[in-house]
Amino acid sequence: MTFKESDTRQGSWWPSAALLLAVFLWGSSYAAMKVVVASFGPMPTVWARMVAASILFLILGWRHVVQIRLGKDWKWLLLLFFCQPCMYFLCEGFALNATSSAQAGMISAILPLMVMVGAYVVLHETNTLITWAGCLLSLGGVIWLTLESVPTRAAPNPLLGNLLEVAAMGFAAGYMLLMRRLSGRYSPFVLTGMQCMAGSLFFLPGGLSAVTWQAPVESYVLLVYLGTLVTLGAFGLYNWGISRVPAGRASVFVNLVPVIAVCLGVVVMDETLNTAQMLACALVFAGVLLAQMSPPRTK
Image (cartoon, rainbow, N blue to C red; front, side, top):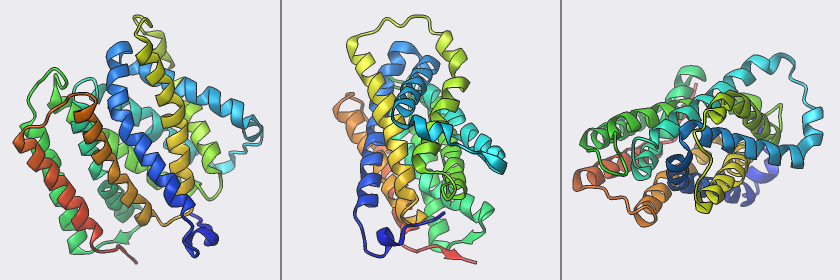
């Protein structure tokens, strides 16, 4: 990954602001996605998100499209598209149909730790025992949260939903590692746009399978919000930000996603967490904080 010296040395706040706005949009997407999935179903919702984002990308960046030269990167790009948006949104769409937005958002706290494990396996980055202890502690919190979940109106099948959300985070971790390889050769905006167009094709059968597109106006407003500001906007901001700051610093911002998701789930969606679930959430946060106490070492 390449970093702009003017951003990292002079402490420019623009990359940090971009990352902060990106994670806020991501955090808000769980509650919005929950509403839209209830109206249209998981597959049609994800397809519509991809189409809306692709249309906006083509309007704003059609000149970039005609200049794309894939070269030898097509295999890595296909793998990137497979991880994100294809498998990530496939897992998350069905996850939010089965569990609450608060629980799904809380599980997203393990994403930075998954990236750390992936970096150890793929990039041969080493970490301290404290970092690995934080990883195991956070994973234990996710397992506890899942085991303590009981079916409710907001989470009819929390065990399945939480497991699917864990799988989604695994694919998101793969996407972030691949971004580190490709961001030096393609602009963040182009990568984001190509991901959206690939997702439009992948989820096309799901869009055509929609039983009905009749829904309240609120669902359509949230669908446009998800497709433009969240899918294209948030991923574009994050791709731009992560290309200008170290990956470890960028991963800290992702830890804000579950906080935003849980708060909006409780306040906006009237979702609740029992005492055991709140303790499990605290365990996840403790693990994430512990992992951040010691910086990674590189061989």
